[in-house]
Amino acid sequence: MAITFPGELHDRNPTMAELSAFWDRLADKYAAQPIADEQVYRTKLARTQAHLTPDMDIFEFGCGTGGTAIAHAPHVRSVRAVDFSARMLEMARARAAEAGVGNVSFERGDITTMAIPPESYDMVLGLSILHLLENRQAVIARVFDILKPGGRFVSSTACLGDSMKWFGYVAPLGRAIGLLPMLNVMTPDQLRADMQQAGFVIEHDWRPAPKAALFLIARKPA
Figure 1 (cartoon, rainbow, N blue to C red):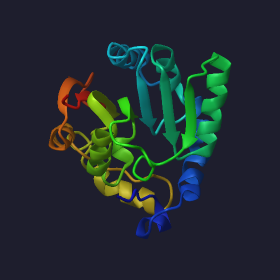
Figure 2 (cartoon, rainbow, N blue to C red):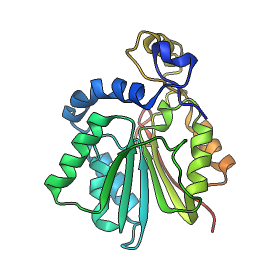
Figure 3 (spheres, helix red, strand yellow):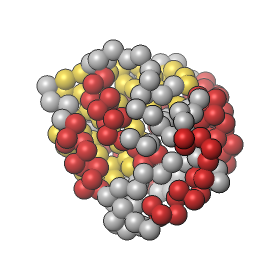
């Protein structure tokens, strides 16, 4: 599975350096932005942490500057967090050190190509990332593979296909001129169907507002 990116990159597989460069340009601005809805974010953290135990190992892809990984780290044995952006990972490591959190690691990586043995993790986090992938179905299938039986996939995804379908026609132009990343415009029902097709059982399904991200907790059957 190839993840494609903006402009001249979309006719071939981009290198990790190219992927990093795009997000590195946005990293400082991204880090400076306040959380859009602090209460909703805290609710998502709490609902995730209700499933965490001290003996768990979790994996996060698209971790950005590491805020969520750091928030969950005190509740589990380990967190392995990956992202394309070297600059965002640099910020994440600094945040973890400042918080005194030592059981989280940050590394550059792509879940679709990393060597991860099947049934390695108790939980996988994919937050604000599935809509930025060319082939979300392949990524969801990979998540299913690396989860232990009974493990959970926690995702929060912008689903613009019902309320902003027109954005699917605008996004490729922004991508072609290097202003936008790949954007996969989907409906909530399409994402739910993708999860179920991969074998997941959706345990928690929450969209706090009509245009808000869809928050799902999906379980791999034991």
